[in-house]
Structures are given as C-alpha cells and as structure tokens.
Length: 161
Image (cartoon, rainbow, N blue to C red; front, side, top):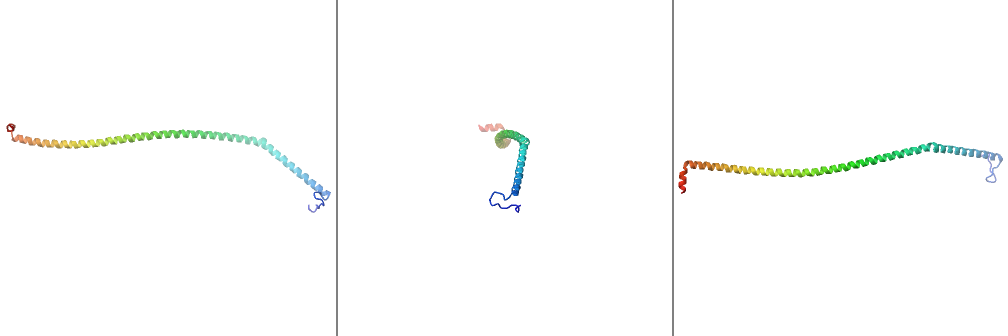
C-alpha cells in the first residue's frame, strides 16, 4: 500500500486518481462499519430498554419489597426481644426482692434460734441449780429426820422455851 501512495507536493491532496478511489472505498467501508455499529447499539438499547430493563425494574421492586419485609420482621423481632428483656428485668428485680426478704427472714430465724438456744441453756442451768437445791434440801431433810428421830418433838419444843 505504501508503494502505491506517492507523496503529494500539497498536503491533504492525493497524488493520483487511483489513490482517491482507494481512500474513497475505505471511507465508505468505514462509514458502513460505523453505521452497522450504530444499528447494533440501537438494537442493544432497544433490547435493554424494552425487555431487560422492565425485568430489572421488577427485580429491583421485588428486592425492595423483600428488604422492607426483612426490615419489618427485624424491627418486630427487636421489639419482641426488648419486651422480653424488660419482662426478665422485672422478674430479676422480683427475685432479688424475694431473696432480700428471705435473707431477712433467715436472719430473724437465726436470731430466734440463737435466743432459743440461749434460753434453753439458761433453763438447763436453772434446772441444774434447782436440782442441786432439791438435792441439798433432801440432804437437810434427811438430817432433820435423823435429828427428829433422835430427839422427839416434845423435847425440841421444851428446849425453846
């Protein structure tokens, strides 16, 4: 191709007529190729706009609806969980209060038990003391009996006078 082309003394003008026809033919092919590309692009646009885009829009709408439904379900679940948390916190508070009351009652019972043990010990001590007194009284009674047996009562009365 370079061998057929000659340099023109003037830039922008072909050197001979055969070159002009060759370039003209190339231009025509180039224009036809561009036109064919435009036609194909138009067909692609048509297919996209008339067939794919509506499907895409419907898919986008389906996605939006699914997303909205998922968000609603999430919010509902979150509300449910918050309600459960509040209920469990109330139950926890009640259990803590009951625990505190049971501790107070336990402390009362321990105090009563301690007092009862102390009272039992006092009563046992008292019983020992009374038992000792009764035993000593029994000894004195024996002594008195033996004394009375040795000395008749009439002699005791006379001695006093």
